[in-house]
Amino acid sequence: MADPTARALPSAADAEVAIARLEAMSADLRGCAILDPGGAVLAASADAEAWEAVARELLAAADAAAGEAVTQAHVGTEDGEAFAVRHGGYAVVAASDRFTLASLMLSDLRAVLRDLLRGPAPAPALAASGGGSTEASG
Amino acid sequence: MPPKPHRALIDRVSGYADEAGAFLRRRRTTRRPFARVHVPGGRIDAVDADTEAGRELFLAASRVLDAAAAR
Image (cartoon, rainbow over all chains, first blue to last red; front, side, top):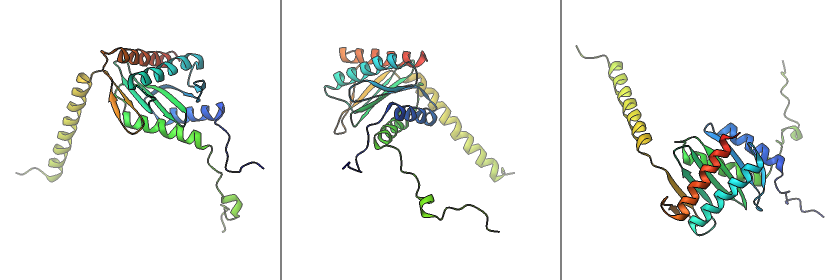
Protein backbone atom coordinates (compact mmCIF):
# COMPACT_ATOMS: atom_id res chain seq x y z
CA MET A 1 0.00 0.00 0.00
CA ALA A 2 1.30 3.45 -0.91
CA ASP A 3 2.35 5.77 1.85
CA PRO A 4 -0.27 8.55 1.92
CA THR A 5 2.24 11.03 3.39
CA ALA A 6 4.76 10.47 0.59
CA ARG A 7 4.67 13.06 -2.18
CA ALA A 8 6.05 13.04 -5.66
CA LEU A 9 9.17 15.01 -6.46
CA PRO A 10 8.60 18.44 -8.00
CA SER A 11 7.96 18.26 -11.72
CA ALA A 12 8.97 20.71 -14.43
CA ALA A 13 5.41 22.05 -14.38
CA ASP A 14 5.65 22.67 -10.62
CA ALA A 15 8.93 24.48 -11.17
CA GLU A 16 7.41 26.65 -13.91
CA VAL A 17 4.62 27.64 -11.56
CA ALA A 18 7.23 28.45 -8.91
CA ILE A 19 9.14 30.67 -11.35
CA ALA A 20 5.97 32.47 -12.40
CA ARG A 21 5.21 33.07 -8.72
CA LEU A 22 8.72 34.38 -8.12
CA GLU A 23 8.46 36.74 -11.09
CA ALA A 24 5.16 38.03 -9.75
CA MET A 25 6.58 38.52 -6.24
CA SER A 26 9.89 40.17 -7.07
CA ALA A 27 9.76 43.36 -9.10
CA ASP A 28 13.56 43.54 -9.37
CA LEU A 29 13.96 40.02 -10.73
CA ARG A 30 15.47 39.80 -14.23
CA GLY A 31 15.44 36.03 -14.56
CA CYS A 32 15.87 32.80 -12.67
CA ALA A 33 16.15 29.03 -12.95
CA ILE A 34 15.42 26.08 -10.69
CA LEU A 35 17.80 23.13 -10.69
CA ASP A 36 17.13 19.60 -9.45
CA PRO A 37 19.58 17.72 -7.19
CA GLY A 38 21.39 16.41 -10.28
CA GLY A 39 22.06 19.96 -11.49
CA ALA A 40 19.62 19.81 -14.41
CA VAL A 41 17.29 22.72 -14.99
CA LEU A 42 13.68 21.97 -14.07
CA ALA A 43 12.45 25.33 -15.33
CA ALA A 44 13.92 28.67 -16.30
CA SER A 45 12.53 32.09 -17.08
CA ALA A 46 14.27 32.03 -20.50
CA ASP A 47 16.56 29.69 -22.45
CA ALA A 48 16.81 26.65 -20.15
CA GLU A 49 20.06 25.33 -21.64
CA ALA A 50 21.84 28.63 -21.21
CA TRP A 51 20.52 28.96 -17.66
CA GLU A 52 21.61 25.43 -16.75
CA ALA A 53 25.22 26.13 -17.68
CA VAL A 54 25.47 29.49 -15.91
CA ALA A 55 23.53 28.37 -12.83
CA ARG A 56 25.75 25.32 -12.34
CA GLU A 57 28.80 27.49 -12.84
CA LEU A 58 27.66 29.98 -10.19
CA LEU A 59 26.93 27.23 -7.67
CA ALA A 60 30.28 25.54 -8.34
CA ALA A 61 32.15 28.84 -8.02
CA ALA A 62 30.35 29.64 -4.74
CA ASP A 63 31.16 26.16 -3.38
CA ALA A 64 34.80 26.59 -4.37
CA ALA A 65 34.99 30.01 -2.73
CA ALA A 66 33.44 28.73 0.51
CA GLY A 67 35.34 25.44 0.55
CA GLU A 68 32.10 23.52 1.02
CA ALA A 69 28.57 23.38 -0.39
CA VAL A 70 26.93 26.74 0.18
CA THR A 71 23.33 27.30 1.23
CA GLN A 72 23.20 30.80 -0.27
CA ALA A 73 25.39 33.01 -2.38
CA HIS A 74 24.97 36.67 -3.25
CA VAL A 75 27.19 38.52 -5.68
CA GLY A 76 26.75 42.23 -6.37
CA THR A 77 28.32 43.63 -9.52
CA GLU A 78 28.02 46.95 -11.31
CA ASP A 79 25.55 45.41 -13.80
CA GLY A 80 23.23 43.72 -11.32
CA GLU A 81 23.13 41.11 -8.61
CA ALA A 82 23.19 37.32 -8.75
CA PHE A 83 21.72 35.05 -6.11
CA ALA A 84 21.80 31.31 -5.47
CA VAL A 85 19.84 29.43 -2.81
CA ARG A 86 19.92 25.70 -2.07
CA HIS A 87 17.25 23.80 -0.18
CA GLY A 88 16.61 20.08 0.02
CA GLY A 89 19.07 19.36 -2.77
CA TYR A 90 17.29 21.72 -5.16
CA ALA A 91 18.67 25.13 -6.06
CA VAL A 92 17.37 28.37 -7.46
CA VAL A 93 19.65 30.86 -9.19
CA ALA A 94 18.42 34.36 -9.96
CA ALA A 95 19.57 37.64 -11.42
CA SER A 96 18.19 40.97 -10.28
CA ASP A 97 18.63 44.68 -10.76
CA ARG A 98 21.36 46.45 -8.85
CA PHE A 99 20.58 47.66 -5.31
CA THR A 100 17.74 45.23 -4.85
CA LEU A 101 16.88 44.44 -1.25
CA ALA A 102 18.99 41.32 -0.84
CA SER A 103 17.31 40.01 2.29
CA LEU A 104 13.92 40.24 0.61
CA MET A 105 15.14 38.55 -2.55
CA LEU A 106 16.79 35.73 -0.60
CA SER A 107 13.66 35.30 1.47
CA ASP A 108 11.51 35.07 -1.69
CA LEU A 109 13.87 32.54 -3.26
CA ARG A 110 13.90 30.41 -0.11
CA ALA A 111 10.11 30.55 0.21
CA VAL A 112 9.55 29.54 -3.41
CA LEU A 113 11.97 26.64 -3.13
CA ARG A 114 10.44 25.49 0.16
CA ASP A 115 6.93 25.62 -1.28
CA LEU A 116 8.07 23.76 -4.37
CA LEU A 117 9.40 20.91 -2.24
CA ARG A 118 6.38 20.95 0.03
CA GLY A 119 4.03 20.48 -2.92
CA PRO A 120 0.69 22.07 -3.68
CA ALA A 121 -1.35 23.23 -0.74
CA PRO A 122 -4.37 21.06 0.03
CA ALA A 123 -7.67 22.31 -1.32
CA PRO A 124 -9.77 24.23 1.20
CA ALA A 125 -12.19 22.01 3.10
CA LEU A 126 -15.02 24.50 2.60
CA ALA A 127 -16.86 22.49 -0.06
CA ALA A 128 -16.55 19.26 1.91
CA SER A 129 -18.03 20.82 5.03
CA GLY A 130 -21.23 21.76 3.21
CA GLY A 131 -21.30 25.18 4.81
CA GLY A 132 -19.75 27.17 2.00
CA SER A 133 -22.84 28.55 0.30
CA THR A 134 -22.45 32.18 -0.66
CA GLU A 135 -25.98 32.63 -1.89
CA ALA A 136 -27.93 35.45 -0.34
CA SER A 137 -30.68 34.28 1.94
CA GLY A 138 -33.04 37.12 1.52
CA MET B 1 3.58 84.87 14.39
CA PRO B 2 4.37 81.19 15.10
CA PRO B 3 4.03 78.74 12.18
CA LYS B 4 0.95 76.62 12.05
CA PRO B 5 1.45 73.15 13.63
CA HIS B 6 0.85 71.29 10.36
CA ARG B 7 3.55 73.41 8.67
CA ALA B 8 6.12 72.28 11.26
CA LEU B 9 5.13 68.67 10.70
CA ILE B 10 5.48 68.97 6.92
CA ASP B 11 8.92 70.59 7.32
CA ARG B 12 10.04 67.77 9.56
CA VAL B 13 8.83 65.04 7.19
CA SER B 14 10.42 66.65 4.15
CA GLY B 15 13.65 67.01 6.15
CA TYR B 16 13.67 63.27 6.83
CA ALA B 17 12.92 62.57 3.15
CA ASP B 18 15.88 64.75 2.11
CA GLU B 19 18.15 62.88 4.51
CA ALA B 20 16.96 59.51 3.19
CA GLY B 21 17.46 60.61 -0.42
CA ALA B 22 20.99 61.76 0.32
CA PHE B 23 21.75 58.48 2.10
CA LEU B 24 20.57 56.47 -0.93
CA ARG B 25 22.59 58.62 -3.32
CA ARG B 26 25.74 58.12 -1.22
CA ARG B 27 25.06 54.40 -1.03
CA ARG B 28 24.72 54.10 -4.79
CA THR B 29 27.94 55.92 -5.52
CA THR B 30 30.07 54.28 -2.85
CA ARG B 31 28.86 50.69 -2.99
CA ARG B 32 31.50 48.39 -4.46
CA PRO B 33 31.04 44.95 -6.02
CA PHE B 34 30.95 42.27 -3.36
CA ALA B 35 30.32 38.55 -2.92
CA ARG B 36 29.03 36.69 0.10
CA VAL B 37 28.56 32.97 0.58
CA HIS B 38 26.51 31.35 3.33
CA VAL B 39 27.43 27.87 4.52
CA PRO B 40 25.50 25.40 6.72
CA GLY B 41 25.67 26.43 10.35
CA GLY B 42 25.06 30.08 9.59
CA ARG B 43 28.59 31.16 8.74
CA ILE B 44 28.78 33.94 6.13
CA ASP B 45 32.03 34.57 4.28
CA ALA B 46 32.86 37.60 2.20
CA VAL B 47 34.78 36.57 -0.90
CA ASP B 48 37.60 38.82 -1.99
CA ALA B 49 37.48 39.62 -5.71
CA ASP B 50 41.29 39.58 -5.84
CA THR B 51 41.52 35.86 -5.11
CA GLU B 52 41.24 33.18 -7.78
CA ALA B 53 38.00 31.85 -6.25
CA GLY B 54 36.62 35.39 -6.07
CA ARG B 55 37.40 36.06 -9.72
CA GLU B 56 35.65 32.82 -10.72
CA LEU B 57 32.64 33.75 -8.62
CA PHE B 58 32.33 37.24 -10.13
CA LEU B 59 32.77 35.79 -13.62
CA ALA B 60 30.03 33.23 -12.95
CA ALA B 61 27.73 35.96 -11.61
CA SER B 62 28.27 38.11 -14.69
CA ARG B 63 27.34 35.13 -16.88
CA VAL B 64 24.12 34.68 -14.89
CA LEU B 65 23.34 38.36 -15.52
CA ASP B 66 24.09 37.90 -19.21
CA ALA B 67 21.72 34.93 -19.36
CA ALA B 68 19.02 37.02 -17.73
CA ALA B 69 19.63 39.88 -20.15
CA ALA B 70 19.35 37.55 -23.15
CA ARG B 71 15.70 36.72 -22.56
